[in-house]
Structures are given as C-alpha cells and as structure tokens.
Image (cartoon, rainbow, N blue to C red):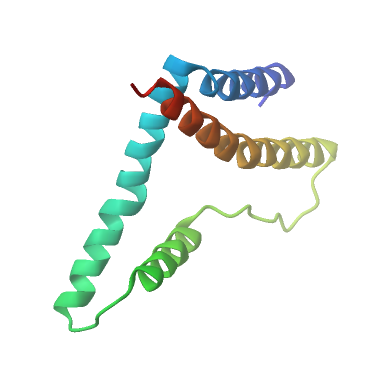
Length: 124
C-alpha cells in the first residue's frame, strides 16, 4: 500500500464516521450495520443453536455468544511473523498495517453508535 492509498483510506474512513452522524446517511449506514450483524452473528448463531439442540446439548444465549466469538477469533487472519528480518520497508508496512487496524477498531464502533443515534432521530 502506497503512502497515497494509505492517506486516502484514512480520509474515506473519516468520511464514513462523519456521514454516520447525519440523519439520512446515518440511518442508512445503521441499517447496513444491522444487516451485517444479522448475517455475521444471527445466522451462524441460529445454525449452531439448532445443531447443538439436535444433538441434545441445550445452550443459553451467553454460551452461544461465547461459541460464536471463539469461532470468529479462531478463523480471523492473524499477522504472520517473518522468520527472516526484513528491511525498513517491512517495518513501515507493519506500522501502517497496525495503524489501519487501530483506525478501523476505533472508527467502526463509533460509526455504528453514531448511526444508531441518527436512526433514532430520523425515525418518525
């Protein structure tokens, strides 16, 4: 990722957060977050609940949440450490990658919270 692409991605992320605070765009982004939550948490949770109940293992909502979190944590791509030492380009790439992950970690929940507030204000 070049320096220019890195800066553009941060500007677009800031625009997403800013748009999340507006009435119309924020409400639309909130609905997109709800749809993503249904597909990434609701559908797999229902499938796991159904499979475990068919096997005779009753689960509570908290247990189901922990199972889903463990599966998503296990399947997430973790950064791979290199066995050979890279040059300064590798260090710069690692810093940029960590900065992008930190920005996403901060911006996505903030955007979801702002869009929820926008949905409440836009609702008739």
